[in-house]
Length: 400
Image (tube, rainbow, N blue to C red; front, side):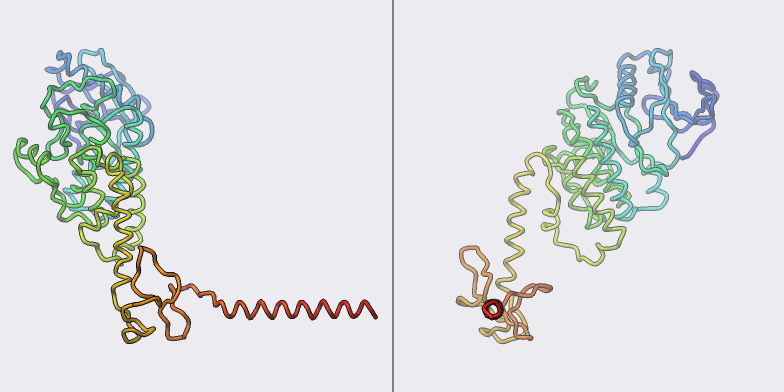
């Protein structure tokens, strides 16, 4: 992480922490690298002097501290200390070494599908803990994700929204970063955990393309695209495109949950790490959309319908495609007719009268040997006869 020397106006000591470097500055204040007497390094955030007298900003800052205290788990930087009553309120969190996702992509370019899936799985799992604490981040973006040696960490809960709290915004006023805001934020509608899911989808797209899925432009243009235009996912890996597209659904109820995202992304990360996805050709875009695991909201009903349709579509080619190994109308592979493996009727698939293989046995799926009724009857008859002979022999021996 880039560090800058302290400026003349910067404090040298805040609370019990000595400040060493500047880590960055934002709309609310400046973040410093500091340490306590034991040498523990912290990231210490101090409100700007001109905002310290603003009660709205003080309330927002207090909310950030409250959100940090409520979240458990390793997904965020642990809160170390805070002073909300100081002339310039501040709080200190555990220092997280490592670049932001934004800086990482700028340095090395788009990340691989395996890397993005692994980062996304950890982030979505972290958001589960954030949402369980009743907090919505509302400004999840590449610059607010630090890539530490122990995994990605979510930082900067400055505009986080806690359940039951005021949003501190006016209707129609968007708070956050254009290009990563959800449509409901732009409209001034209710903010929910699905809002963070949208931002996560945009963040994952950025990690694979080094660009926002809604392009570039002024804030007004970006916000318009978020609400009215579809995300551009050119360059997003086929294995992740359906999941990212679902996260970027305009309707919050059509987005998957963070738990579902975590499970799905873990599967994709494991498969991509083994290189298995390269052996599978990409499916058409319409079919890839149906591969998403069960989502939340109204997509639950659509998921069931799509799964049924996909099952029927998968069986249809088997009934119509010709098979090799014989002439039409014989046991080889022509179109099936009549009762001996003909066209299916009533939606059921016949279990008998299958195509004959070269070895003369009835054709079934590879690895399965069909049961021969005639052979079973012969074995049964032999078993009965042998049993009777043994029983008669035993009876004759007893009479002697």
